[in-house]
Image: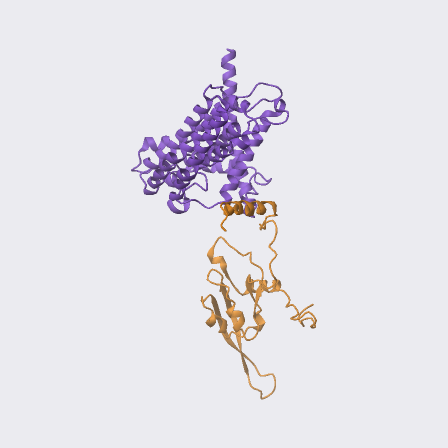
Length: 322
Length: 161
């Protein structure tokens, strides 16, 4: 009975984090992006600086009609938003938050091969966009779907290489083990890996400047063209949940997770701080850079990130063996 | 020399600089915009100056001014004098849904019957209400700002209070 209760509490906590953290990040994007463009962003919803804007957006999404094109593959079309959204929640289960007030490391489920699990599940999330692109029977969606596939092919490799470099350095695949093996020197020795992992993660999430598959101005949001209402809302939510997972994973692998002063007492807060600092950079990159062309997206992966990731693996090998 | 990554750094720098400065957004319905006094908001009609000469209606590029008038005879005030005729303005409408705010009507008016006013909040939910008649155009007259002195040292304008 106690076990069941414990599992239930863990599930509720992870689910709570999964539903609130992306919204906080979304609101952060609203305001940060606005101020970086000398605007104010939402100011009315909820009276105080538009804090309730995303709740209002959610209500709007629910009210809207969910249209399915006649020629669409109906089952795949309806399943795609769920496939895009749910994996990030599953990935969040395995990512450790850190200790708080002297407790043990808070984590939904301590999986031995946590790194392997999270990377595998994150890859599934992208399949959602691919399904949407093929099932919509729309030329823009199809183009977007092809671009998603190309981008997935290109960026999975450098991402996994960079992650494997960290696993080699720590000598374990457990996310808690990696974070505990972290030392400040990693900021130097794993720096290329950090850059490769973060950039490749952004590209995999189709975040600007790597949003060529969505590209609202040229192919009308690509795979999401035919979606409306809450289904579209789920794709958008999946984007932000994906950013949270990517930032949390980057923090655990490369920034020591909960490492910091008094980490026994406030470790979880350090982790959250690092996640949102990385989230700040994700949004910053969206504001600062124009969208890469499709060939540029793939050139960056194969000509820059893969060699850099291989270099990182070589460096780590030398350091581990020496 | 081309420095690799210079553009990327510049993008980050400019956006961060924007974030650290105050944003330039004016919260319009809450705070009124600080418009120049001579902004082209709406055109006011000073009816007693109008002679129904129709110059404004003819010069209007979008044909948004409608004028109707009739002639009235003013009897001679002195013995053996001549009766005089005067145009009386029956209708002077401006359709703001057609007007393009070029100000040509004001320029051509020989008797200064038309004036720019900076007021701009007269949006309506019905397009018919955008046609302002004599009375509405007269009401805008009280919002016309007094002309400013042309040079700092010159004497104030004679219309100024």
